[in-house]
Amino acid sequence: MADLLTHVLVGYALLTVLSWRLDWLTRQWIAVGIAGVAIPDLVKVDLLVDADRVGAVLDIPFSYDPIGTLFGVLVIAGAIALLFAEGRRRAYAALVAGGSSAVLLDGLRLYADGHAGFWLYPLWWRPPTPGWYVSSDPRVLVVGAVIAGVVFALD
Amino acid sequence: MKTTWRLGIAVLLLLFVLASGVHYDAREEHHRAQSTAEEVVADYDRYVGEKALLFGTVEAIDHEQGTATIQVEGSSSIQIRVSGFDSDVSKGGTVQVYGTLRPDQEMDAEKIVVVNQDPGARYYKYAVSALGALVILAVFFRDWRINWSKLGFVPRGDDDG
Image (cartoon, each protein chain N blue to C red):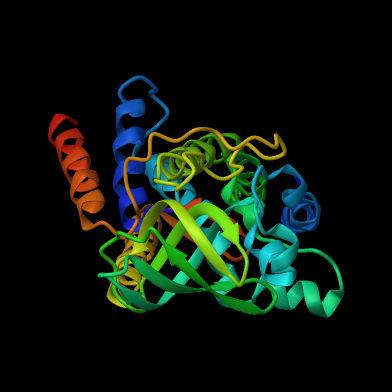
């Protein structure tokens, strides 16, 4: 996936543009949306608790991959929204907006066979990708920063 | 909504996502057009002649010959010698290889994508992502805090402290 900082910059830009249309989307809710951007990155929990190890110990097939899908964003955003004392619907909308932007951005990465991962799970379809970048390319971060900078200047 | 219900449902939703991980892993291979690393590593000879999309770490590379040896992980790992390897990547880098599996763990590559050009590229991603995580925490907690009596996030500047 694109690095988390690029996700944050692109997510910030998207949410700020949306805030020009949606009165309720104030700075504090944009902040919630930016937190939502991190949801698909939670697949990285695999680095701490290896999915193969969990599957071997419990003797079940197991993967963290659904976390990085649109389905994962919708469900995890629900869990996080419930952690808000009030304004849970707005929190959910902001978290989903942020998380979805990250999933969509990841769907634009380069894959050797031209198709991305199953980010529309439980639809078993690997959408075609325009293959615009690999995550380790520093130019991705530069583009993200430029987009965020332009939006910031226009805000 | 009562706090215990809120938090209980939040936990259930997280468990639901983890449970979907069982379904996902059980069904994924069935829905992939090409062989996956898991299948290939477990039983290479069965997939000879078929197309595969594999991720691997570069163990060795011979630019003159246009070949490279990659290590592919599944529940164990195997080494595959890839020909048609024309990419600029160092030992320790990571690649995606799409191509046809041949006998004796050799592979004819149709397309190669360099995921990490060298180990440094991986560290770059981790470092920048860690920075992203810090930015998220700073941005969020600038406007929100945890109210421990309500057990939830509340906006800063909320009157009931």
